[in-house]
Image (cartoon, rainbow, N blue to C red; front, side, top):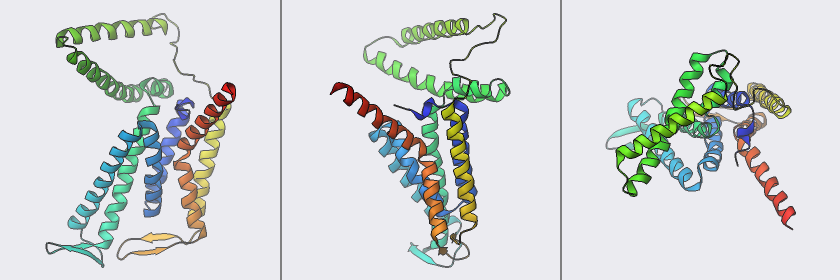
Length: 280
């Protein structure tokens, strides 16, 4: 079950904003690697093992492609890594491209989980009152993706049953129209009062606690990193140095990035243990 998705939509959006901000703010190879590895666990949890592993493998290939292309196109650096068909691939350019690839693929994995958590209704709940135009744009995109996936599945299913395409499209259109009309009526559309939301707009204790934890840990990570001697300089030549504070920062950031996965797994274990206790 997706327990992290039960937090207030604002808290979910806050977490994803902080995760992306930290990854881009540091632009550090160590942080990018921690970010990428942590998102692998979350993505596989949300998408399933088969689909998750396939996407991760494609992501690793994409990282290598970006690293090689950056080495060929950029060519900066002082250390020769490989020579392929007379083309020198510099180590510094290759590592810089790897860092870019880790950030890109890690972000794709991150928002793969975001799509599982945030629906168009949640975005309207968070932004609809103050930023209706932005909320409508985001929610329309998410709704369009969801509808296309659902429609495609239905079309394939009915096509295998031999049902004509026009019949399927007509039936799905009527079904969607009825569902939309009933939803608008039940939520008070056109009745003069405020429309209701299917998601709660009130923050509860767990939302506030999680927000405080994630903000505090983020600030702490920045302070630790600023006071450490850890660095990974790529240009003009590769230079790396690590100390206790820097490694602690990597560990702390790893905890931040993987926190939703930990919440989901912990709750799932507790739930299974409770079910086991009831049955025994």
